[in-house]
Length: 214
Image (tube, rainbow, N blue to C red; front, side, top):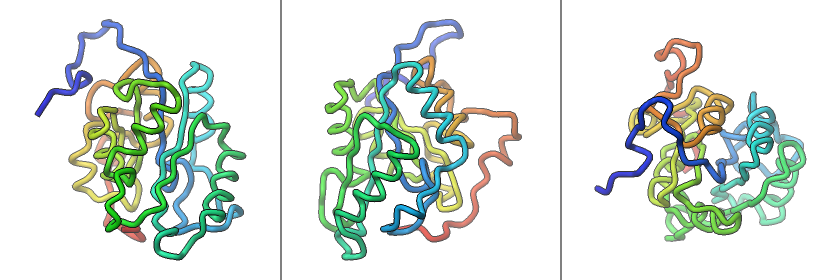
C-alpha cells in the first residue's frame, strides 16, 4: 500500500503544509442525526459546530458538506426535502463553500456514495483544492474510508452509532468536532488520537450501534 504523505510524522516544529478545505459529513457530525430527516425544524447543530466552523473561516479554510441521503432512493424523502433540510443547516452553520449530496442507495453502485470517493473528489474540485490538502470529518467508517480512497485525510468523531471497530481502524480519532477542527488549523493532524483534557478511555469509548442507517 502506498504510504500517505501525512502518515510520516515530522519532528516537532517542522512546518506542515496548510489544509485548503475541510469537508464534513452532515448527520451525526455537524447536526444531530434524525434518520431520514425531512423536517428543517428538527435540525440541531452538535455542540461546538458553530465555533469549529468559525475557526476555519477565520483562517480562510474552505468548508463543505458531503452527505449520503439514501432516503431519496428508498422513497422516504424527496430531493426537495433534502434541499430544505440542507438550507436550514446552511442557515444555522453556513455559508458553506460547497455541498455534495448522493441520493442513491447502497446497492445502486454509485461512485459518489461514501465509502466511495466521488463526492470528496467532486467537492475538492469545486473549491479548487487538492484532495491531498483536504480533510473529511465524519462519524462512521464510511467517511474515513471515502477520505482514504480520495487521497484526502479523514478524522473520525465517534458517537453512539459509531462501531467500535470503526473507531479502532480510524487513522485519526477526535472526541468532538471542535477538537478535530483545532487539530487541522496548523496543517494535517499528527497522531492517531487527537487528545483533549479527558482520559482516553472516557473520550473514545463507544457503545453498541443504535439507530444506524444502512
